[in-house]
Image 1: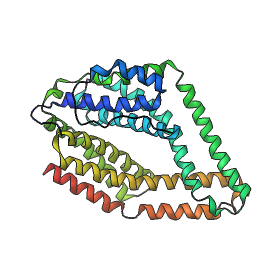
Image 2: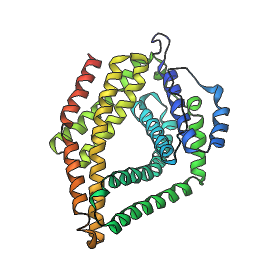
Image 3: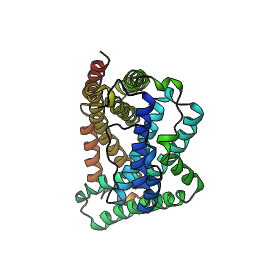
Image 4: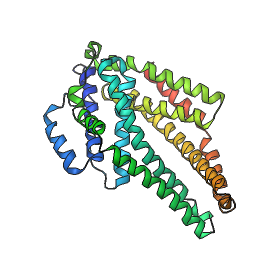
Length: 312
């Protein structure tokens, strides 16, 4: 944990952004490309906080996942602590990060869908039908990967990579960010918690997949922000982050099973001949979705209890 007496919000945030940026570069670029950018920015780290050493994942799927996580966390920092940045710098950066998050998200979501469908393929006794399902998923993934590859050849992508590579030293802060880290960062979390409560209230009133997914997205933002606050505020903030992580992970299963069910349904609509072969596999994912939804309200209550402890 960083000494509160010496840490200012801008120095902590700058170093956290730098860490996320390094993880992105290592996983979205080639070894050679990322090595050059990391070497060029090695001496520009603004402030040392406890670091999770960035590393390149072994598989292409793992690299996409890590790059996506890094982009999401960069966006979370810029959104949650928006009051600490000059808007003329932060808003364009958020637009570009959102664009590339969509590129990575399409590929990653299809990979998660494929993994979920494959785990239940044993329920299909018709081997040609099994093969057809896998081929369709692989083709969708291939098309998404080709789109992603094309986007990486654009000037827009090249400019974004350059901006991410130097984000730790080029970030433009508002004067308010120069205050004590614990005090300033804590004050910025009110909006994130308000968004969690709003989304949770809507989901309690109507627990559609869309509403539960909104809760999950807001919890991810709260988790990231509390992990940052935990660097200077210690265990109370970390406990909120862990409770948020547990709940959003549970809701992630709900979302994944809902997507799997929707994809299977669309396949039977497009190919009525697949209706009977897919009957049991659709029932499997429908039940998995129902099971995953159990207890989410209690999990939200745990997050709220941890939040009350932090603010108390």
